[in-house]
Image (cartoon, rainbow, N blue to C red):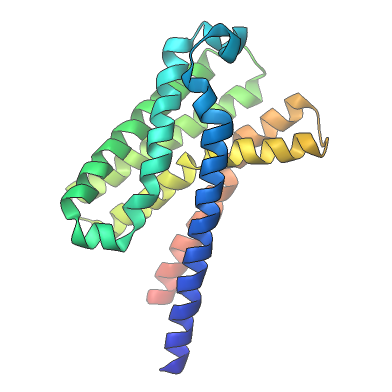
Length: 210
């Protein structure tokens, strides 16, 4: 009994620590990278992005919405006590991620940078949109546990943009790799590695509960 209580306490504090860390990283990304891009001028976007501003700007706005809304979908108090709010936020989240994923695929497909970088970002868009669609299909078919799993995968990929910029800044500060090497690395590592770790957690939890 005490052991079970101890495990619950450890799990609770781990979740709190993870939530605080996630919040800090979200604030870092939104303030330093996302918010400045809400001013769609050539000076801010640069020549590379400005000619595609009608794709980039919605992609950024939708990404911010999904990044901010996502964590609230995993708070039991909201999910259990404010189900209507949970569902409304969920609809906004899914619409945001699907559309942002599609716009991301378009930008990657029309990019004139090196192929590995473009393919990495294109696949990020594919997996992002698909995960959210699978979450929607699951809940429509009343598969609640499956819905939760797909929502976790979806948000892991949503958070990839935060991971991308945070690790990129660290690598640049430490002068590790060239600009091209960093961009190619992070176009894959920012979502594939976190998704792999999340999958181990999800499947490990199922094995433990059997």
